[in-house]
Length: 206
Image 1 (cartoon, rainbow, N blue to C red):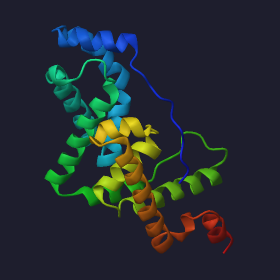
Image 2 (image 1 turned 180 degrees about the horizontal axis):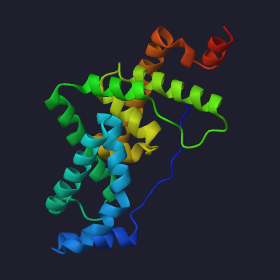
Image 3 (image 1 turned 30 degrees about the vertical axis):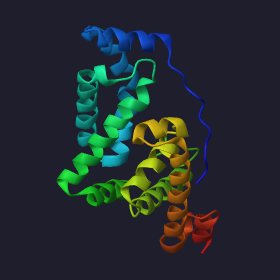
Image 4 (image 1 turned 90 degrees about the vertical axis):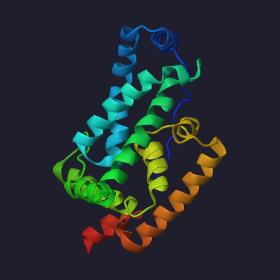
């Protein structure tokens, strides 16, 4: 899986001001934070839950919990990883409570994910099938492996932010990503060899 380098994101002045005003008791100051991070909160929940309705509920609850717990937020820290930690925990708890984590993932991957833009229908079909099989492969990993891979490769978060989201040190995140990647490669080689470089093309020619 190709790795991307995301920029190191600091805390913008407007974000710091909004957090401090909301902590001081101004509920309207929290609205810009909701607007800024609504999409990434939903995407994070959806990548874990694979259900749009569940993801929407989780994202909304995460914002409510974030607002109610602002006094425990450390001033000066970036808001996004703190929020995504809440989202991630809520999404995982929802799946465990319903006892259908694997069912949600498999149902979503059967539907497939369409790319934002595709040069032609044939390439779109190939990309969609590759994504579907990749998600099926990832669904066979442990929950903690899935989470770090989703955060890194689907949301493109830097290791520093992933560490804040899962509550671990950056060095631990680095080793977890490495081990999760190795386990994913093992699943792909055993169950989905067509996902290896050149594998889909070989399958099409065959």
